[in-house]
Length: 487
Image 1 (cartoon, rainbow, N blue to C red):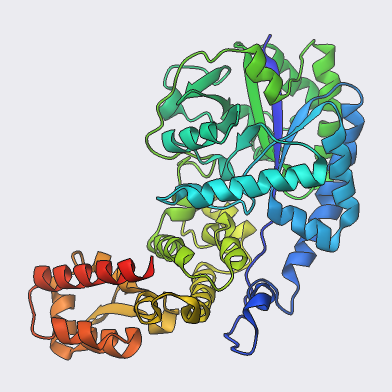
Image 2: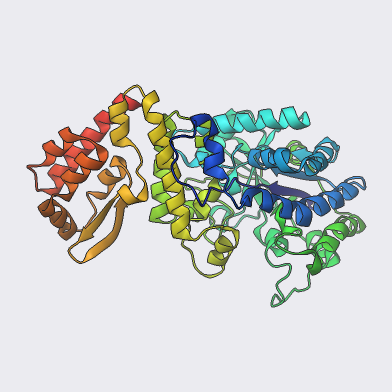
């Protein structure tokens, strides 16, 4: 009978200010309040609601079961901890009780629950991991040894960096295209790092299907679930769930807390043992190595990065925030902008995945994107006086939506927009030729570069060219030269 390794992800983002507008009178030291708080106090309200519905009753229930021998692990984001420190220290005390219990293990993640692991350079990812480790040590007196990256995002390179940071294991999704014929009920290895592969079906039976009345296994009872575990093959079953499953996603009236309270007892009746991840990596050797060249995650049916990087808006925002690391107005504020939720709100998915994205978002897709880019643009604008080459940094800066270059044809907008010179370079080779000819004929490109970006020299340089490859080569080379002055 396999051991069971159970983990919970506990996270709240600082949602961005939907009423944001630039205010030069606000000092850089106070940017966070202008970027992340508004008159609706949405962050505090969401935290209080989730605390009442989930964090308090679920944690009290788990604490009772821990005393009876139940083992589980928790991954708490730094942004959640900050919110609890601000608005609900009682819940934080409950998590401190959990962390001090011998039958729990605190995991590490990126402090800001961020997409930094997707950056080309991994220095920021590593720094946010260290920040989270320091927070867990300062708050709970523990040094996490097992890692859970944001939403289980994982690939070969992440495994290597996590291994080099000294971790003894990592959680990710038991994606069938990675496992192939192999079972997720074993430890695996990637770049010499032990990997826990989440059992998707057994985890989602609780996290997504529990209250689905059309499911053929409804209602899910603790004894039935324990039977499924007891009759499973393998050595180690990994169950990992969003903590808000209990009480927030599925309300108390669904019976979810009765399930949580009864499951450990039902497992005990069947001789099923729960195990902490650090114990598991000592007890079991990896069954095989896995190769993950392309990033996987636990999000949506695709199990990839498309939840955050699946459309043009998300990619534009991602590229912009990645390059914004060179702009130093307030590095902490920039890090809040790397939180994965901001990109999740911009997703344009349909069906059940789209419904889940809409459920979590406090803005529609377009508004979420506009808010994000407006805030990021303001941040970079404020950074300019501190740059070693202010002029170059100004030309390369991210623009708010109203100042972006929106590619058009005589018939109107064609769906491509450049929010800085980097993105303009990327789009030049792929936009339809009739659009490029239209903008060249009307002088739009030179005018935008001169009047919006503020680069008279580049505007003059491309003024005499009309061939796509010539203009693209000039702008790309010019852009690269500017970055050498900034980076």
